[in-house]
Length: 123
Image 1 (tube, rainbow, N blue to C red):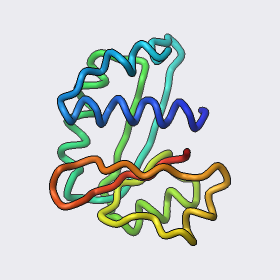
Image 2 (cartoon, rainbow, N blue to C red; image 1 turned 135 degrees about the vertical axis):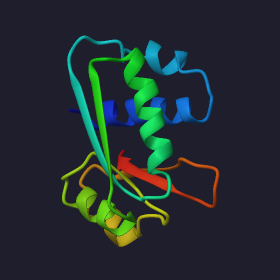
Image 3 (cartoon, rainbow, N blue to C red; image 1 turned 60 degrees about the vertical axis):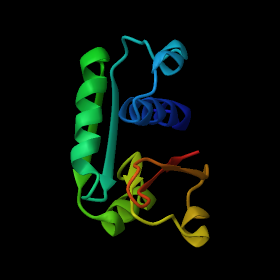
Image 4 (spheres, rainbow, N blue to C red; image 1 turned 45 degrees about the horizontal axis):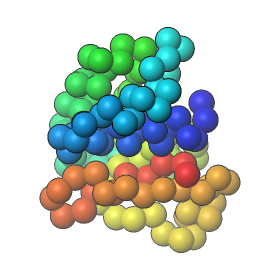
């Protein structure tokens, strides 16, 4: 899966959670019959919210499977850096040192409204 597709699907997922229209995301060629699978891991606090967003998104995009393991921010970042997951949820931003380890770069997107729970995925 391309990093661009990971970013697009994740952005649409977060837009859903924020109550924004997902028409832009779905018009950007996300409507595909090809199965897409994304996996993420990280922070436990936003996990129930992420799981709700995933369920809502899955209902209208049955070919997209998204899994999120609530294992803690540090473990999520560790898995992301090891390329074991497509995105990581964390309560802190990825350090410049760690970000430099990701070949194609990273994008960090605040995903919740409490404090700051950024999500990191390939740029």
